[in-house]
Image 1 (spheres, rainbow, N blue to C red):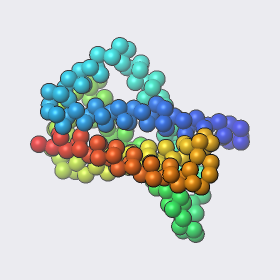
Image 2 (cartoon, rainbow, N blue to C red):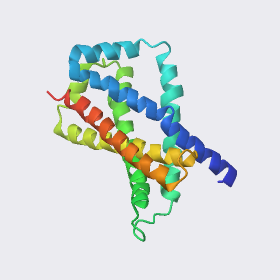
Image 3 (cartoon, rainbow, N blue to C red):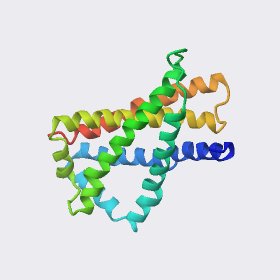
Length: 203
């Protein structure tokens, strides 16, 4: 890949990870969190989303296509990058490695989640509280979703740190250190929201 194209692709990959993919993650988990208020609150939230005009177009333009590019280029980065963890073991090298590992886990998780929800909806299954609760009636799915949520949120949080660096927002050691603490807080808070939302469906 030519250096110029690689630079632009890397910038776009980083940007899409935050806008719109990261924002959608926050929206999606917040919407699911409504289940903590009961089945009716969750179903009302789902109903509002389903009534968005041209929903399928919106999903493809702002969710599926950005995720597809981010995933494909992310896999390219993951398999092209040279890992230094064994030689150096620095914190950021560890984060670099885990960003790639969680990226692969997240991709598997997203594909499965889309199959269990959006594809099933297209096949005529009604998406509501009972449908999601049925998914979590399996202990294996609870474990799978727990790993998936934690991996996805870590990938987003650590990716946020990388975005700030790559876009020249945090250029010095001090600002990058502060960003590390802030993204750790983001990871803890958003993971709590995701896991708490999931627990609401476990009957």
